[in-house]
Length: 331
Image 1 (cartoon, rainbow, N blue to C red):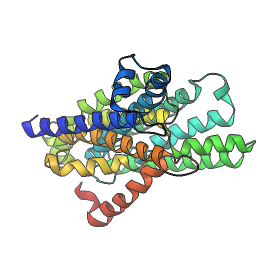
Image 2 (image 1 turned 90 degrees about the vertical axis):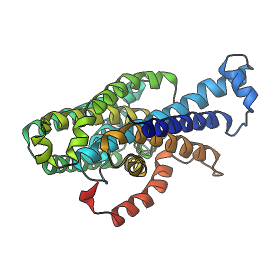
Image 3 (image 1 turned 90 degrees about the horizontal axis):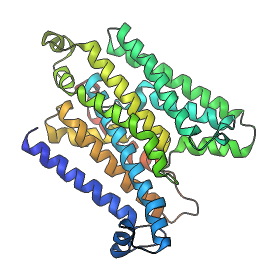
Image 4 (image 1 turned 60 degrees about the horizontal axis):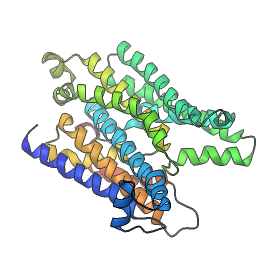
């Protein structure tokens, strides 16, 4: 990478650390810098240790990693499809992961164990990824792949609506609805450890496709002429985005728009090169979600807002601006 890329990544990484630190400081119970530092090194009062290590720090890291997964997945999909409006939900992986989680809640399988729900979300994402990978191998058109994803997303959405409609009691309905709204509240380090292998595998696959994404800016025919294996590139991006997005949904539920917004904001800073967009987009998306979650916790409302709702309120206007101000095929 060139020096400017390293500077951008360094600044965004510092912003991520600062946002996570702010998340540990701010909340209904304000903690000073000294108390937070003491808690981080294990030299604080038991109450401060619980607030920092069991509530605020896991929650901040969950938001940071969820945003990173969605941001890098969105950047990779936009590069693959050469469409600035592409994001993890466009191929139906988010919707399928959410459907699997909703299924577990509907049948009360969350009582089996604490990991039942996130495992189900990851399994749903992997099932969608397997289907999309098979489609990517068989079809030679990105448009066809998009149509398959749209159909998968629509089917998953319809099935979630059916499960909610048939919810056996108001409590199950509330649990399913809360999951679809997205949140990192009450997340623990155990939740992060469960998602970590899938996040790492997804990131590795997406980064492995970065050279192919740069070549695809010239168009598929030109990229193929330059020696790019288009089928391999599609498999890497589809599987990588599926794993990362599935882990994100398992951690935080359904979070929209950040996968569109973050890549768009950094694209001009890296000369519109998809390969150079991946890491900055991941870092920026993580910062956005951490700051949004801080806003969720500090909002003066009777009930805590959901992170997915706040992300949509922030991201939807930007999405409209992108859609109205750019031609879809220009990336």
